[in-house]
Image (cartoon, rainbow, N blue to C red):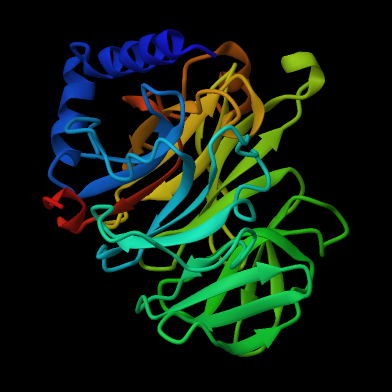
Length: 342
């Protein structure tokens, strides 16, 4: 991909996000604009991946890492919004749609990207996720889970992975982890693991991924593919869903015909959810990433109007979707630290 094509694609997506919205979308944008910052990875005009931040309405986009020699991806704000965890690998390597949490080396920076430093070599701290207090990281390795003290870099606890194999996320109260598991007689299930008891339960089984907790820990948002004989060669499209951590009360969040929806991330106040959507699988990090979007959870369940989806979900609403620039694995904080001068 040439630099000119990358720049053209980037500017086109930014202009699309900035185009005059409908009144309903305009109201949605106004609601979310003051609610902190969203971090995401995206192609820079140079063609490499950097970590960006923007207001939740897609404005005030800024490059946090600006590192032309590396591919920077998978940003995670600490829950207080003061620290930024991400991964970096030499430029020219391809970000995997499934294994990105194991690629490259882990990096730690202030929330605005300043004072970035490595936390280990390539492959260190795979799938690292923040503890609620920002003092520890939980990692998922082939031999099992490990909790690492951030100050000393020492493992303070380890335990079997119990079928979990990627995308773990530590709960806001620190008592549980959700992630992708193959421990329920099928692959690609979303499961919860209670840290005190080591008991695991399925949240949703088969063809699910990219889970995230609501801020109060009462719901889990995740992607779930609904096979359909007449859609996408019978493969179907991936939809955004939510359920209680014990798997009760599963409910559609949002579905489109013609796009896979991944990377769901709930806003800090629990009222909105971010996602990415693309024709290609896994959020398409190998190319440009996918256009991000945002909806109100109060408007859900909702669909982009389509005859098949209407038959599948007759009670779903049609409601505004805020279109955002292209990116991968967005993360939201209510803190203002990402916008501070470096």
